[in-house]
Picture 1 (cartoon, rainbow over the protein chains, first blue to last red):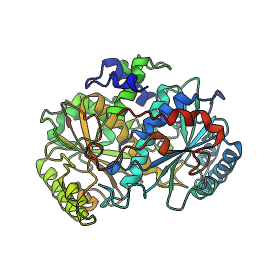
Picture 2 (picture 1 turned 30 degrees about the horizontal axis):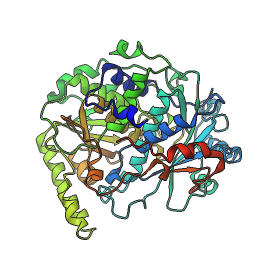
Picture 3 (picture 1 turned 135 degrees about the vertical axis):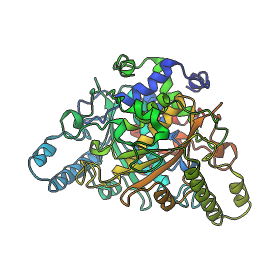
Picture 4 (picture 1 turned 180 degrees about the vertical axis):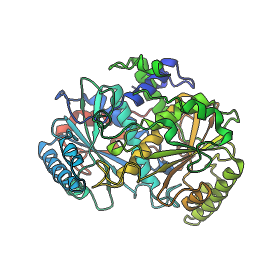
Length: 244
Length: 244
């Protein structure tokens, strides 16, 4: 695998290579259903995890760990936590949103062949980590970059990933024997899928709309959308580059 | 630009497209020096920001904002904060590490043509966001996924990105007029570079080593490296897929 990548590690990207990256970004989905039971080949799973491991990290601290899970008993315990927390969360909203929320399929814990917990270890290479003294959260942020890397790699391999954040981290710590100082960041469900939806499920369901690019960009200061030094890009983003 | 992407949004990735994603991941660097003063074309900058905007977000809340900065006065203020915080941090370590740390070039705030602050807005589409009730940090995590997306997109365009986490968020909030509830997550420096280093600067400098993939993966539970149900992947990862 080494030669395969190094051989093409030139500075420039071909149009097709570039397109591969953008295609992964724009067709990646949070997958909660329709997982195939087909197992993920170990070579592919390694490539996906290696993509995560090559994320940027504050002070090169590489503060992530990846816990692979397929034990049905573990999955069942996590699923129970999900069900309890989904029920708890539903008490925070009124009808008709409540029923709509409860009707959504939001995880594929039992159906996906591989579950993956990604954790943050603040003690790794510590206590002094370059870039983490003033902003301690930077360590956690590195772990999130690793998650996005592996999510995109999975997409190119046809593997769907779903992030389950409706569960108790205390349960997770208990079930996975995490030491006290370890922070569970993500609980992911991985498995092959036959297709990736053209849009996020919550957009399709009309729960929330996709914001335009122009709605999320400011110039020089918070809330400044019209700064004259940025006129050209304002003209471009108002046309909305809204592919999937 | 719409057709350009949609036209190739088939399920499968060609080998070259797949390679494009892995190449971006493995050759992406945190860039702190050698920025070209050449400005980034607005079309390219839009594509990079749009990649960020198409990150996954908890409950489809899209809680990010991107503040583009090129005002030299703003950059100078941020640079001052960096210098102060770098000095403060250096007091946490002893010689000879201290001198080594102080000798590192850790940011390109003034030299890079574009600075970018990425922020988190917990109030967007709130207060109830699906998946954020039990784990409120999930909103912040979404913003980090957006940062990694835009970092990879920049890499394919030949644009280097450096994340400066040695600075005061209070200064940042003040200089950029951020409302109280807005969290600055990243301050990034963007600009074309002639080349991307084969390894992270801190690895090259011998500050810290790259961990092996086998060092960061556990099976079923924390610290279990030998679970017999995962024998095949253990054999694969011990050979170390260590391309740059």
